[in-house]
Image 1 (tube, rainbow, N blue to C red):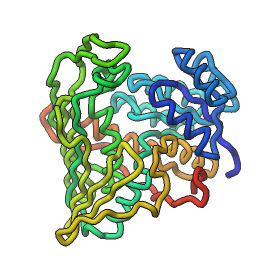
Image 2: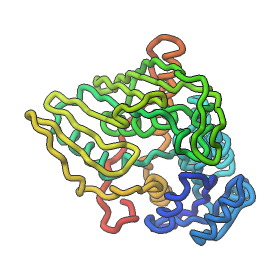
Image 3: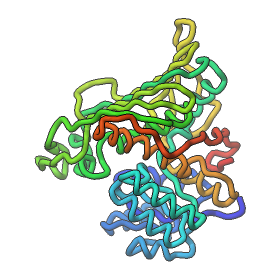
Length: 368
């Protein structure tokens, strides 16, 4: 690698801890230059704990820093657009937590800016790059289930207000189960099955309010502004049909599930919110667990996609988490909602081709 890529982290909230751990201790080809958060204490704590060189007063200070090549945007979903836009306008590459934007229109505008300025843009989730889903992809690509004909994905729970320290945003603009958890499931699906050409959906809001039972907001009542029971049907480019169900409304359920159905067997895919297994194959009436040791990054490896983008910038190759993926996933999710609102099937405008599969590294933390 010709250059170590400098990173500025914007947002030091709940998910920042694992990013800080992996950026500073696992991935060897990136360097964290500085951190910034609206709550200064969070940034100060991160700077002290991880020995970060700089603390920025504002995100614009980070964007003006010549040592920063790539901005890591892990602000709240409804803030993603403004932060990413400002970084792109300042000439910085951007890796954004999911989703790319709170609306498809936001995503389109960010992609336009990145193309116009010749900058890298993409982002989470990067869990599909882990050993679990990469193993599942290899099983499918080698023909173990025959020709894929269908898929089902489900993420079911009763919301985050019982455990998350600040759950209100999950029920506001940019939140809801599809934009929150859908990126993991749909990103996994398109990496396994290819792009989607058409969607339909039915969605609703089951409860008008939510009462927080976690600290420090115990007892506060939140108005629900988004659909929290969302079902979608996906027509893949290869002719397979998929279904996705995400909800914050139900008690019990399977929790998380992805199954891929083929002409000769069925593949059970691991939780796409994680990087590991298990991967299970049903063939000839028998379930077999498939070893995932052909790939690395089976532990929580968030920032893997960031490291891959940095490698791409340095080497001039396409990032595995680039905007062709994050924009396509955003369009799928938002058009499911639009289909529900309008009562019709919707043809997508974006097109997606799967990126190159992962390669097990000789040294963990150095990408191919």
